Amino acid sequence: MSEFLQYTVNGLIAGSSYGLLALAMTLIYGILSVPNFALGGIYALGAFIAFYVVQWLGPAYYLFSIVPAVLIGMVIGIVTERFVFRPLYDAPHAAGFIAALGLYSILEGGWAVLFDPTWRKIASPYNDIVLQAGPVSLTLQRFIIFVVCLLFALATYYLIYRTLTGKKIRAASENKSVAQLLGISPTSTTTMTFIIGCVLVTIAGVLDSPAAFVGASMGLTPITKAFIVVALGGLGSVPGAIVGGLILGLGENYGAAYISSMYKDIFSYGIFIVVLLALPNGLYRR
Amino acid sequence: MQLRYIIFLLIGLGIILLPVFVQSNYWIFMFTMVGIYMILVSSLDLIYGQTGLVSLAHAAFFGIGAYSSAILQVKLGFPIIPALICGTVITACIAAAIGWPMLRIRGPYFVLGTLAIGIAISIIIHNWDGLTGGVSLSGIPMFPVIELFGYSVDLASKRFFFYLILAVLILTNFLIRRIVNSRTGRIFASIRENADLAEALGINVSRYKLISFVTASTIAAFVGGIYANYMGAIEPEIAGSHMSFNLLVMIVVGGTRTITGVIIGPLLLWFVPEFLEAAQTYRPLFFGLILIVVIIFMPTGIAGKLRSLHPRMVKWIP
Image (cartoon, rainbow over all chains, first blue to last red; front, side, top):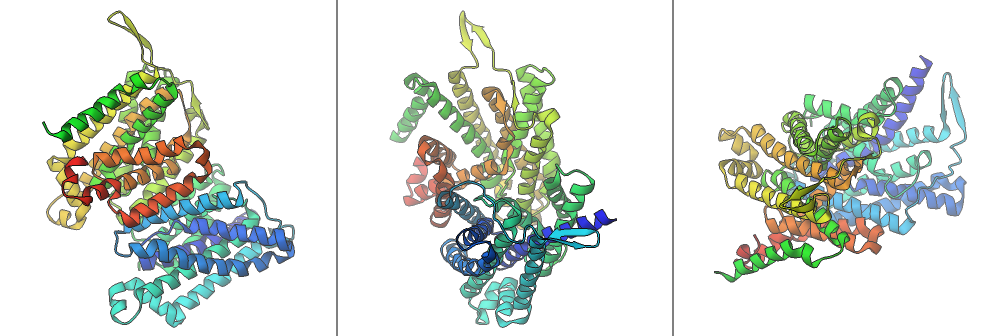
């Protein structure tokens, strides 16, 4: 039983970071109908920001790296939207998807050239502090991942469902041309969505980096899983992304613990294919 | 005879005589590899260009074809030709078993599904050591040396494979042309242009998607089998999502539904980068940039762009 609790906690922590990535993906999907693979490269950028902040300012400033991560995330959101996705507004969705794959390739290749393609580790000050709660133990770092992901997920939820900007984004993702008739600019809502999405992803990169190795291609697996989560939760659905992330995190950890850890990644893909065949519209229909 | 045909004939003759002029085995090897990519891209064009489905699992079937043929030879001692045929048939069955449920899924879900299947297959190949040899399966027999009219012909030589791959490439494109110009090909086009309308007109969309998917996967599997015997050792990476992604990039950049596109894509994106060896680290950067520039400025690919320059170009760009 105590083991089960431990796996549950591990699953929730992994799931919260999947959820944050999936949230970014689902918002952008909602507005452009493009699964933005390039977010994987932006996730790696977040991890590099944390790495350099820790290297230059010291481990105590680890959490401070969220500030530059947010700023750089905003800039990269604006730039990628303007120069890659805006020219493709009227192209078929497959074109947007292929452009996203190309952008991912540029980012991954770019980080490998800029930051030199070796894998490295971040010395977060919270990695060595172990919290004990009954039978469950976890490092402070992982606790921080969970809490900060939850905070940002709630903030996004508030932004989407309780503010005027959020209302515009929801209107534009429901029906772009009607939204435009009502005076909602499609370009500025799309830019706003990209800013939110890219900021969420850089933050996820900052948070996950001390628990993983930092390298140019580190974003590929998490973003593929975020894809799966988004498809599980229903493309474009905000609650679906968060719930789907937690389910995937739990499923993977239980699968690894009780069946086989070698095939851990297969479980997520297996879950995905089964759900896709059984519920072709995802858990939450939009 | 028109000037156009004379030029095409000269190009064809040049390709056939290439091994006579090029002495180095390295270059023959490179041309053979680019030919393998061209066959894979031609078959992917049947799925993507003709039927309009974005598949990120195409390399997986190339990999399954290579592995099933190689395993039959290495573990069960099959001779080469039966192994190649059985391997291709096995892969066609796997493709049908995967495609049958998957092709009912539409749009982005289908793309994500093929991505998941592609990754899952390469993980399975990687982890099923007992059968697939894990990180690498080696010891695949080479083609034998045979006596032909008193001459001994080394079928494992680089030159023989060059002509073998060239023949398969021509046959593949001939076969695909035949399909495309038939009723089936017109049904593929109707699915690509508007699947709902095709369904409303009484076309069994899933069935024709499956025909397109399995045909293309079977071609990929057959080349995979030849590739396994050519290389003598194969790795799980050949089935991975990176490989599938590269194939998709090649067809998008080269141009769909043209023979020129199928030739330009692998030449530009595999041959040129391989030639510029110093640029290894810049390769993903180069790939991504070309892809985005092409998709924004030439949505129909390089061949399509060339065709649209002048009405007469359509005849020059087959």
